Image (cartoon, rainbow, N blue to C red; front, side, top):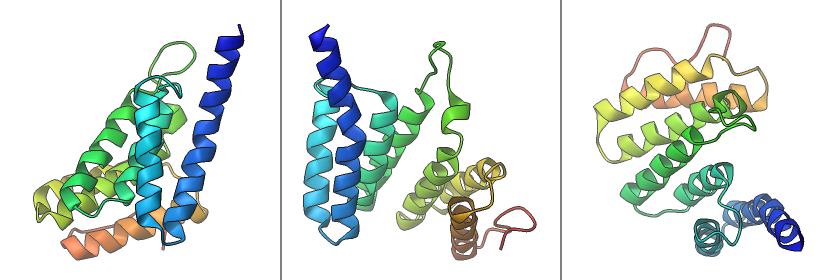
Length: 168
């Protein structure tokens, strides 16, 4: 019983530790953020901090942002998408509805990665997936920001459209 409680409390600390590393990154300390996220990734994967697919998704997503090499960024973004696809609900079924709001950002990141690597067709394909999955996003800072980022990348790639009517 005490072991299960300790594991649950360690798992609860994962989002806090991710947030702390993200704050370091946004504050300009990319290397320290990358190091902390990499250590947390190792903990999640060897079971010391749970191994929850949601944690793996968030970790991979933020680790990607700290990479210097676009190929490494792509690898981490692919891992984030794969982890999102593995998130399941309490009933054991895929919980796509629980993480639906992540998919536009995950696909958008992949599109940007492919664009950086000069793989324009792959970038356009991911951009189309980002656009399609963003249709259900609510208006507000997150949804509007995602739609704006889709439009900006679409312009860079010369891809038509960028969001549903009514989104600026």
